[in-house]
Length: 190
Image: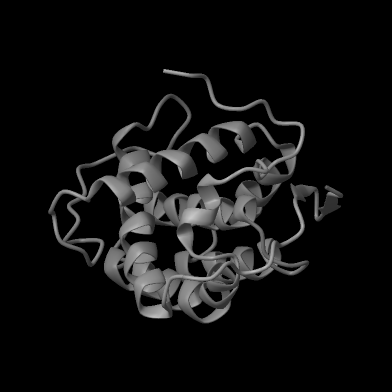
């Protein structure tokens, strides 16, 4: 399968939508749970060099603090594996540096546009989730409402990315080979 590199972020071409694709409302519901959970889990595991952490509830992020089902938990784990394989990309570090000192919402809007300027792929969706986390982490010390940042990110996800996710067959297509990032070794077996 041919792959392309746009904006420094590798991706595989889109596959045709299989029958039984998820509905947009299902994609939105799963996406909201994935984004909030991704952000919260990164906030909980911040390490050296990361912005200072404080405990953040799902309610502060606009969600409910209820356990996810196995499907969402599996998808979140997949997104984290994709992130781990991309986290050392110097282009991502450069975008993070560009956000420093900017008001949170304009920073998230600018980076979101930059990430998707050349198209959509699963790696870019994960980068978008990561930048949402970074903006929320920076906003923790200020007066910005975390929920408004998450709401903006979800609206962006729903308007700009959800139709693409549906064409891929839904969120589950993030878990199916071919791997999202060609040349990235498969995740270790557990």
